Image (spheres, rainbow, N blue to C red):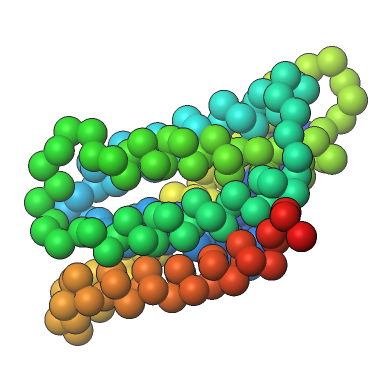
Length: 194
């Protein structure tokens, strides 16, 4: 159980580390369109992302899936760029579709982000026979950290949109524009073609 706590903490710290800001940027871009009243839809969205990155994290850790780390490091900021661009098309905030396109983005992009986590996790795992508890603990730590990021986004949005009365669409475009610029620079720096 001691190892469980250690890997849980490592997962949490990995997600909360500002040096690895790419995941934080992705979660912000993914969730910025929602507010507290949309919590059910946001829960589905985050769950789709979690399923995606959990699948590839496990497949990679168990050496079922092999990939080029250079391509994954490039594709992670590309997913952020695409998600930030998708926010430009949010004009109404009714979110009536049962399964909006952003859910599929979250699931698919989660697959890519999971591969990014797996390289770090592989270096930490013991060479023992049963690494499932360590994998589960790391993943749970990631999720707790991710949920704290989501809650922070919701509180910041609440302050700006509800308290300061900033136009919600302009707020989303401003935040998404900043995320787009940072992620585009990251993608250009990680370009695997050169």
